[in-house]
Every structure is written in C-alpha cells, then in structure tokens.
Image (cartoon, rainbow, N blue to C red):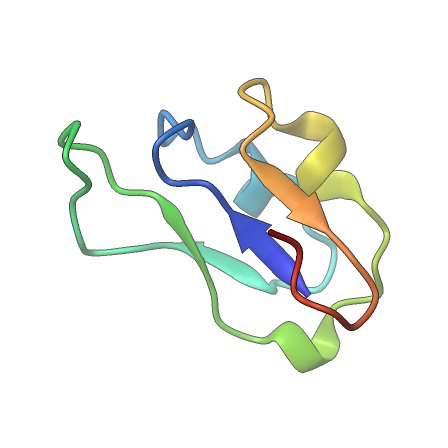
Length: 70
C-alpha cells in the first residue's frame, strides 16, 4: 500500500523518477497549493523497494505491506 500525503507534497517528481517499476506518475489534478502530486497507477507492480519514500524530500510518502496506513 502506498500512501501519498498531498498536503506535504510539493510536486517535485523525485518519487516518479526513482521508481524502478513505474508505479507512480504525476497527476493532472491540482492540489490546494496548485501543484500536481504523484498518483499510484500500477500498485500491483510495486516491489516495496521504498525508493519513493526514501527520495521524497517532504516525507509525503509512506509504504506498507497490506494494510492502509493512517
């Protein structure tokens, strides 16, 4: 499970760039801050490598195994 906190995200795209399985892409929607956050498009392909979480400078991404992280 990949959780993206859009309120913390600044839309830098590092999570998309460092994902080896193209699980994320930049969304077309805008947040309240006027940025395009990443969105999960292929969660089933995620290997839980943690790159998206590790490279996020805003700590806006959390990954877990199966349960939704609150």
